[in-house]
Image (tube, rainbow, N blue to C red; front, side, top):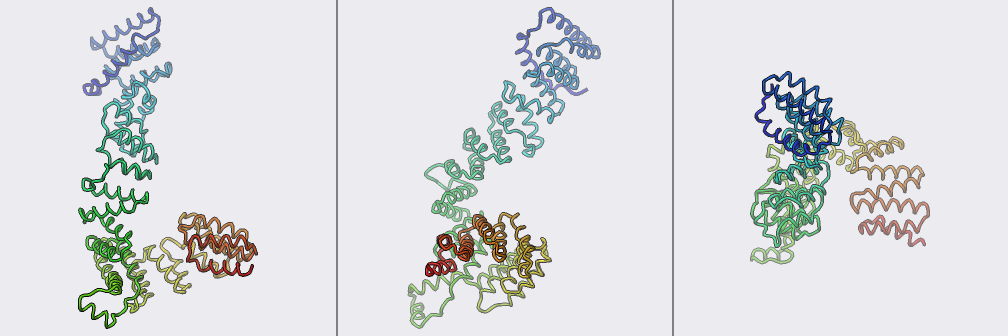
Length: 548
């Protein structure tokens, strides 16, 4: 027999409430009612005298006489008193066949199944109760499943909303919002939180609004004017990113500065973002150096410093006048410019990379030696041969797709096509379609090349490249109309204006070859709107205009 003390307290409360609501609404004939309750009295007498088996059998036989919800519930109440929960479940299911619209029967069946620990079955009967007076019973099912399975349960968020209405505990609204978010329903999650919960859930609400790209709502959750010092660094970074997304870079930079000043060791991100968005070389070099002092192995900061060091103009030696001014403590405009160039030093960049690689957590990351190779290539006096460094990279990171991707690009750019194609055949992730297509194209195997390039269409990031290369092969085969269509699609998928401009140039080349000069002129003009430095497009456009 199951223990009765703990669950009878709550269970009998449900039954008493339901029975009280229904007793006087029974529409059965009085004589039938009298006969039914006369049988019930015999059951009660049997229970009182300890004749539980007789009571159980009488309750089973009385199922045939029950015709109203109150009568069915009177049977169930006694079955549960006798701890006959399995029998009570069968009684209630039979009752619902007779009275399928009865919310009270569904509520007690839900409660009985919960007492048996059958949550998965109970939820079937509980869901219709969410919009009924018995929604608290349904809420109990949802809360139980949530406590057992967590957010992985993927239950209907309305169960949590019902639990909130029953308890006024805002945490249930937070759970409901999380369940909406897990389904990708971010707008619903944000609306629910903004409409219901208090300011203690501001950060959580802001996170969901940010994920929903509702940046204005994120900003509205915080007071104006902003006293940034009262917020945690995590909230400040969320605010800064929201300002950045709506184009308010100045506000974002103000917040990053507060985080860097008040919590310099919290995260490398605010310092890196300040350096990335600052136009002054002097300031961004200082803030980037400070960031790397606190976070020496933060790769984005190292990569940014390395990139700027590689692209700084060469530093000229001081002439005699400049040397004298420097010695006397004076600074000219030329000297300031030279000082800014010295801020990003290639030797220092190599030192920063070496220091980062000493961190055991990044020792297996091939991106750091790749930056060293890039720096070595940019230096006038190279430390080692570039190709030797690349072979060392592959030896030390033989299973790294990143290392192989860099090596493929390096040898292709160097004109060592055979080496690039050979490495592609042993790529850790399998041959890269782009290089397979190039190899086939160079061997005159156009169909194989096209198939390889079209495989790239499965990757959203590379689809535009595959289509563009396919189009150029079709152009060489004389299929100019197909080539223009493919290039047009590729241009629409291009990741930036410069790439799109390059594709528009090739469309112009094909149109010019078809003697469609007006269309070619229009396309080339658009290519220059996208990228004013597209010299090939400018040259071809000039040629067409001269020939008119």
